[in-house]
Image (spheres, rainbow, N blue to C red):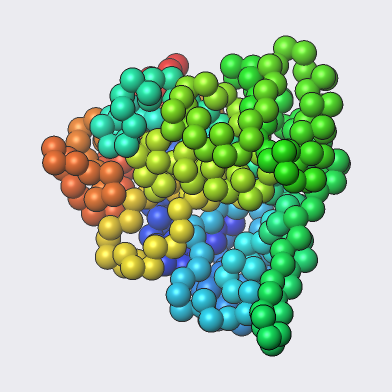
Length: 367
């Protein structure tokens, strides 16, 4: 298999974790006889410094021409003083719009070797394995924003907006995904007070009628936030809007022990390139200090292999190697405990790549 992967290392720890993921993908290509061509482009704050634009035309064109995109992280205090539409985050919103990415998938998985660092009691963690499907192209992030700074009493507004079409297309993805899992969709909204959530609930309910084999229930967002902590095993596929999904997936990442462990996929229509990235930020305070956990980026790479390239065996082969390293006690500082072999990011990545080089490509733990 020959694939082109656009890499956007970005800012802060982004280049470090992206390099780790690329190294693992190179090992995968070598072991299985694939060809992965990596093309790097500026993005976010890095692109502002170089091109005065968080999303240069060259970067957008390169991403659209690739088979998939791997993003590190963007942003930092260096650019916080810029106007909203020119900050690194504007590049992220822009690439989602320009690449027509309207679905975001965030898998919440609890790795057995890391159960001890989760803040929940062990009995509440049993069976914790669910997907958060977040609508990515609408809601408050893409509505009109106003800020009346010069008024006697300054005011601001952000418009949240959804159409039935936007809700329908992400809902169908969630139901299709649930049909291949435990056949349960939990839709999250705030339909008791928000008009957009009323439309959301009505539309999701309508789509659900086309999937009689999948159970649908609805939760208000405040209750959903509580239930994630009380009984995470009740969830299979959680479907929600852009802002609620952003918040709830960060909360859910704590179940696994660290936001640094969770990957994500942003995609649009079938056949178009998807974007993969860890859900953590750029963590500028630890950038360049060999402290960043590379697992969110590495798991984003395995998600890419499975979802965009159909290489599920290769993805599992890499994840098995990660699990062996964790079982041997190696940890970066964010997921370490008193019994860990705490190492830097580079050494942790080296341990994973050593495991890959020793592993038999013909076998995985689930083969």
